[in-house]
Amino acid sequence: MSEPTIRIQKVKKNTVRTRLIIFGTLAALLLIGSLFADHLVPYDPYLQDLSNAKAVPSAAHLLGTDRYGRDMLSRVIVGSRMSIFGTLLLVAITTTIGTAVGIICGLHGKWLDTVLMRVSDMFLAFPGLVFALAVAGVLGGGLQNAIIALAAISWPKYARIARSQTLSQKEMTYIKAAYLAGSGTGKILFIHILPNIMGPILVTAMLDIGTMMMELAGLSFLGLGAKPPAAEWGSMMSDTRSLLSTVPWVTLSPGFAIFLSVMIFNLLGDTIRDYADPKMRNR
Image (cartoon, rainbow, N blue to C red):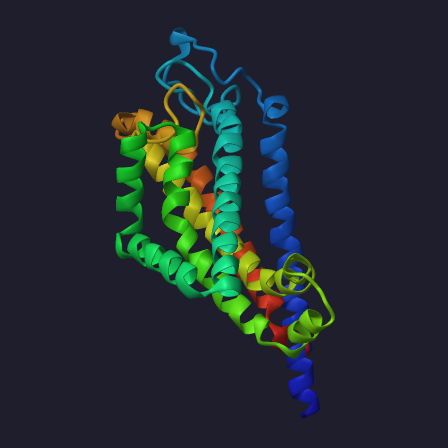
């Protein structure tokens, strides 16, 4: 390999590391800000002041106020906790269930593999968000039921990744040697298989955060997620959509918060995928 090529590869590797630090820091700031949202708000996000309703953005209220006189900046900051941590909980549930199903199918196979994979095919056959709308509607709405509905449609992807990775690892020589050495299934699973298959699964989970956030906000916007007066970005947009032509800041503020958060998590996910690429790590 020529020296200019080596230099280009080093530059690319350093660029990926720099991006990882930048987007990782931004994501960490989002999480910390959401966690301590109650201490960052300038006003009570639920305090109504009808004498100051629909106030334009100013020094006193940077994002203006809504129809009830509630400070929009405070509501956007507090709403980040429900929107971001609700999304992370959804991704964690989906990843855990899908990975567990995929490992069971990959390890035991036979009729259980056939049944579970056909069930996953059935879930994948439906348009995702339409299926989630149906499930959330049956469950009766609410943020908890919206998370359950989205988890119900999202686990098959992780199950298939975990299954394929488990089948590949199960045929490796070191796994067969571990069986011959007397290791039980549990030990082989947690010590050998699981650590070696988690890379692609975690990268997929990171890339899914932005998508899940938009879908969760979409269900709330349609009235099947968080309910007013709860400060949740999708619900806030739904509650104020009729004011978009007259006082647009009350709708655009939570919309911009969703856009910014999704962009940060998507860029972080892309960077982690590049960083986890074996070709990149071996340079």
